[in-house]
Image (tube, rainbow, N blue to C red; front, side, top):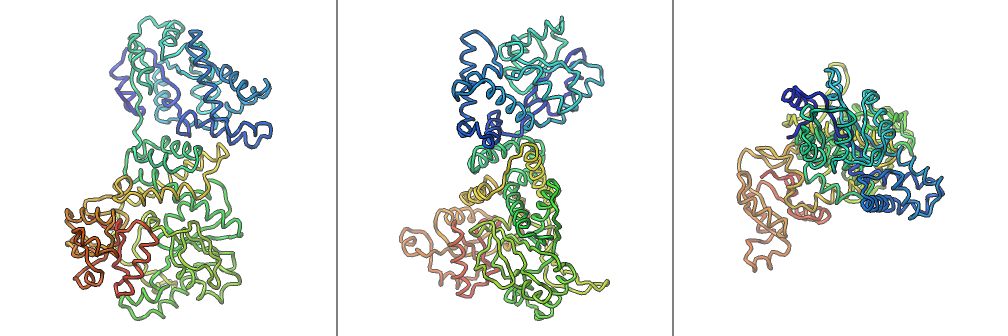
Length: 622
């Protein structure tokens, strides 16, 4: 049987009213760790040893030494028919393997103990269940198979909650008996003077040790089964972590937030995928701002909305002195070529109104930074140009990815990623439409004009997931002194999704009945629209195959640079110029490589195709 939290716990109590004593397993039932596995503690400890000169010779191999030493201690204990080992037994082997003295071994034990404490996270719902049982005058004890003795385990738990101060603990290493072999249950029965095991209920997360063995001894036993973490989240964390420590921390966050992940797909996407990508960029923004003495960071609509919230979460967690503000900057007004396509003719007037809007909302007497997700830098160039008379220094421009020359007058460009990433724009959404211009409000201030783009309420849940991730990882970092800064892990997540032609492992959680949530595609879903597909590699072939079954897409032309050879192989691929003569609504580029996609866009626009109807394959709602 399984239960989650105190509600199911009290269902158990109602079914077992004769129960007089409740026992709980400890690790992964009452408390868990902020790392993905017990070994993760050794990798956290390894980072601490790097800063201690006398242990530098062993720190690179420490996780291996510690794991191997425990296994050797357990092998030796079995020869002596001992059921359990202690931390001292384990470190006797560390002493031999590493060639250390007694004082160094004692110090290492203390470092591991303190590291363990730093990594402990309470399972709040189950601790609440224990408190309510105690209020109901039920007796509660804790039983754990662990190498820490009673005193150490009590010390760990007492730091989590005062409720544990008066709860008796039975640690396997104290008695050299385990739950797994049944000896610890028999010892508890004797010490607690339990005459009738039918009045004893045990709850834990291990099916063998916490369910089958106590049941064999006549104890009522129930399995604590926490919410499952989706398999793809674990898989991507394992494949994309840039080192074992970051892998442990990433899975640790998923473990801590597993209940929230299970309750909502959108929250889960924010925690399990987008969180690390947005977090590392937000951390970079703060780092650049501190190095350049920035006083206020301005985030450009619309991609800056989520990024600002991420930066604000980190600022609060770290106590950083840095102001932030969200600006409703219209990319259309910043680019005359885009503005002309809207059919409006008052571009110069709107540029003036944009200037007034910026002047009202930006304090140029401070050192300023402006943030956007990715782009060519034209919006930043426009802002720098129209505010030149208001500034005494260059504006610091920060991009996730910048796809042009950085030498623009008035701008100090900084970019997080070295290549274009179309996915960052999918992951960064805002709860408002595009800014299409500006108008003077009743208060005399310049206000943005937005279009009535449809908005998905699930966006808030998705953003909450990202902020949960960031808040949790910051709390872990604060306790352990570690860091998740850098580019590689988020970069690897982006590459991972790029390697998935059908995106089934990630963006399936964004699917709605009528298309992708958060991404208001340029492909409309009301009628079946006609598209030309450019690209006949694996991605193109899969796209065309899926489009044949789609209610939204009608492929009226399929083209590729190598169309002649493909045509000879009986694929219905035609010359690009022929394809562009067809009555198409959109051109879909079905090519994996981002640089090549960009090149194809240039070719298409040179042939007169409007760039607003050119779409990468992953944005299309089937």
